[in-house]
Length: 349
Image 1: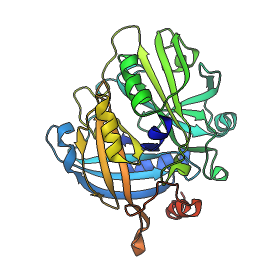
Image 2: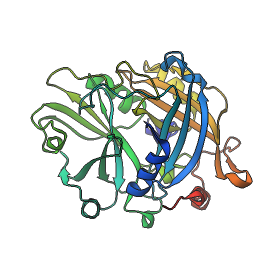
Image 3: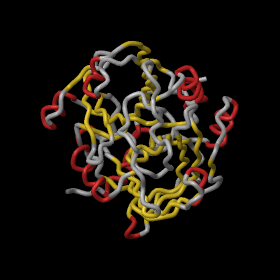
Image 4: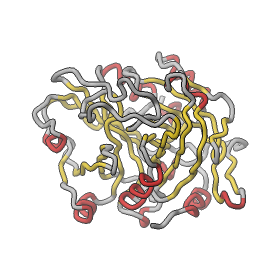
């Protein structure tokens, strides 16, 4: 079973973050977390997402920021038309949807010392740090051992996400059984010391952390590394829906995107488990400076999960140099030197 799953997703490609100012957000993620390579930066219309934008075709500027030390990217997403809406109340841990992004780190103690943040231990007994970006989006910095160019930065890119769910068993059917993120790091119920910093130290939750080791397949798997998904079910009170009354592309975490290796097999696997593709671009869809096939499913609580099968990646846009993956007949990782060319567009502040 594991070999089959490995052939479907290779890692987290990015997390979509709705912000009011993409330029300012990129500078913050660049300066504070080392996501300093804009793989693409373009303005386009999201014509295939009208099901989730109240029938409107949203025009957006999107910057895919990557840290070449390793990990997934941040797709910094600014809706130009219509203007994006904020949540009516600040999301709380356990609310339904993507509550926080996990950022990978080599040395938490060193990071905390340089950033001035407080270290708290997870139920696993490992150190972590809570912080927010300039727009109040929650982040959790955690240690991880999968790196592409560790000498570049103590922090890396996206390792995973913390997702609020209403029914843990239903959520596990998707994230664990269907997507194959199937190593259970812990499954614990109670109150938690590390949630005190979030104002939820007295509330009861069930927490399940799932992990998937770096895949052996996929063009960019050596860059993406491991996957960690934390599912949190609130047991006291009724949680809010983070995107209640709002649309895809509004402010906050709008989707979690996995890098797909074989979209047709992935579609079959998802549908066989009761998760239909709700959006599918079919063949190559031009995403401005990048290209590929993308699709979406909903988790049991309506959280949007994206899959992207990458066909074209810009290397040196000024001279029109792109990496074409569509004609590759193998799913083996690209040579490290070739992946490293993405870093040629690094922006130093």
